[in-house]
Image 1 (tube, rainbow, N blue to C red):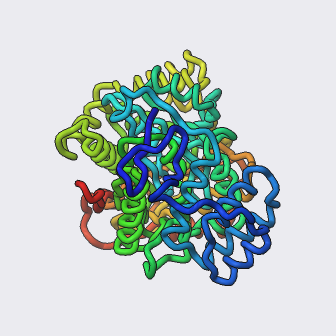
Image 2: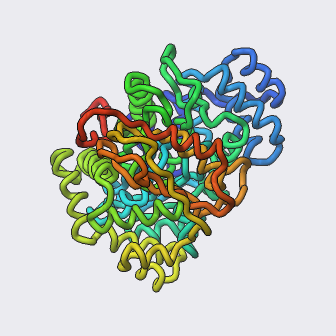
Image 3: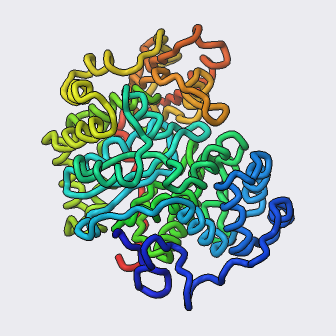
Length: 498
C-alpha cells in the first residue's frame, strides 16, 4: 500500500487511515455533533470549528443531509471568516477520508509523484507533464478537477477528446498506472467524494477564491480577486494518492491567486509546511499568470498545443514550465541527482517521442478508440484539428497601432471566452469544447497596425462591441525595442529537508 506518514510520529498509519489519531493525534470527535445551522452561525460569527464540527459538516455533505443552500452558506462563511491551520488540517483529513483510499504495490512507493496547479489561463501543463514523468519511470495517479471561475479544468480539456473517460475506480487506476504509467481522473463517488461536491459548489457560489481554505498563515495578506483551488481541496486529493513527492504550481499575477510574487510566496510556504505536517513531501513553484500560458486558450485548442509540446515543439513558455516542474519532481523523488538533471530528462522525453507514446497509451486505456489515439499522437497539427471538436466560426482581431507586445492580459481574454461558452455559469453546465482563442503574436514581438494578433474560435454570432473592446484592451503595446519573453517560472519553495 502507498502509505502516508502519521504527522508527529514518523510512522505510517494503519491501512486506509489518514486521520493520524492515537496518542499523538487529534481528539476523538464529540459524541453530540452540532446541527448544520449552528455550525454555519458559528463560522459566520467568526468562531472556530472543532474537529467534530468539521467532520460532521463533511459527513453531511457526503450523505446528502446537507442542503445545497447550507453548503453554500458554509463555504461563504469560511470564505469571509477564514480557517486556522488546525481547522484546515482537519478539513483536509476529513475530505481525504470521505472515500476509498488508494492502495499501490509496495514497489511503486518511490515512483508515485504528482503535480497540481492553483489555476491559470491556457494552463495545459498537466496534459504534458503526466506522460512525460511516466516516460521517466514515475507513476502519476493524477486526480484533477473541472473548470472553476475563469480557469479551464484539466478534465474538461481531456473530455474534448472523444471517448476519454475521467471516471475510474481505484482498481482501474492501478491498471492504468501499470499500462501507461499515468492517469488523469476526476473525483468519483469513491475518491474524495466530499471534495468533488464542494469543488462544484464553489464554482456557482462566488467562493472559487476561497483563500481562507488555502490554509493561509495567520496574518498573511490575501487577494479578494482570484481563482484558486483551495489547499484543503488540493491536499485532500493528493493525500489519498500515497505520493512520494508533489509539486504545486502557485500562480501569481493578474489572472491568478495572488496579484504579486510576495503574497504567492506566503501561500507556497504554507502549502509546503502543511504538506510536511501531513507526511507529504511538497514543493511549490511560483509562476507568473499575467498572460496566457502558451498560445492557445480553450479545451480542444489546448489539447492540440499539448500534443505539439509532446512533439518536441510548441511554445517555449509551456515547454519551460513542463521541464522545470518535472525536473523538480524527479529530484524530490530521488529519480535525478539535481533539479537540472531532472529537467533535462523531461526535455528528452518530449524530444524523443516517449512522452507522446505514454500519452497515447493513457488515451487508449481511458476509453479513447486506439485508432483515434494513434491518429492524434502521430498526425500533423492540421490532421489533429479534424479529429477534435471545432467551433463553427473564426474571427480575427487586428492590432490597433504599431508597437512591441508588452503583454496580452489573460483575465479579460478568459472572461470573454467564458461568455462565449468555454466556461460554466452553473455546476454541470455543458461546455462548448471547440470555443477558444489563438494568440498570433508573442510577448516581445514587434507588431504593425492592422496585423492579426488574435483568432477567436466561436460557435455563436460575431463578437459584440463590449467583447471586442475587452479583447483589444487585453493587448498592451509599447514603443521599446523587441525583447525575449521571460520564463513564467519565478521561484521554487522547497520542503525543510531539502
